[in-house]
Length: 55
Ligand code: SF4
Ligand code: SF4
Image (cartoon, rainbow, N blue to C red; front, top):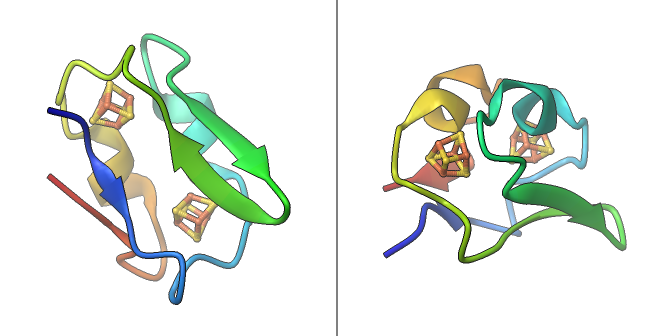
């Protein structure tokens, strides 16, 4: 599994990118994308100001 981004909420702010310990998040076309490196740690969930990420 990997964390899931609700692209309708994501603003592309990038706050989640820096908190990911395994560099699983990139910004593509203005939206966060989480790849299969994700270890489900949850750090990005708390970092997102608009609650766009869930596990
Ligand atoms: S849950 Fe953890 S490992 Fe997965 S994308 Fe978020 S910060 Fe990275
Ligand atoms: S912190 Fe939230 S709003 Fe910002 S890029 Fe990540 S998922 Fe999108």
